[in-house]
Length: 189
Image (cartoon, rainbow, N blue to C red):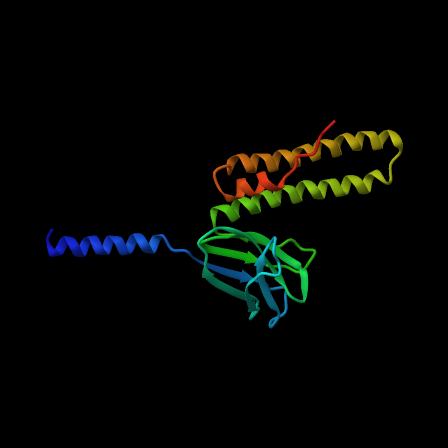
């Protein structure tokens, strides 16, 4: 092997290693929150395990680090923990839009988080319809309530279908495994 080939092989190895990075960068937007407020990053199922903290500055925040595994996390506003977003912390660039509760916060940037947000958007849309039907049910007679109940049942089935479809599309990754481990499909009549 010539000296030139050794250099090319070394350069190719460095490029390959750079592509296999275990670093993550979170770019956050919090335009509706106060500058100086603290954002905390924790494991979703062990919220006492703090992975990082940062401050909002000019409506933005940033966190970065390394992870050798994908974990389900939560980023929240210390002064109001309900202002939060759950997402998959994994290598790559993750974007978070953190909003004051009850406005839904959002996540994007990686394949898993894009799929996760898509599922959340679908469930939120169907959930909003359920809430409107429940409100309408309180103002109707028994006959109309039975009809509304049929629509509610249909929406519940649609929500379940969205969740199962997302799990199936992601059966070979962490999102699919997360749904499989945590979602119990209701028994429909």
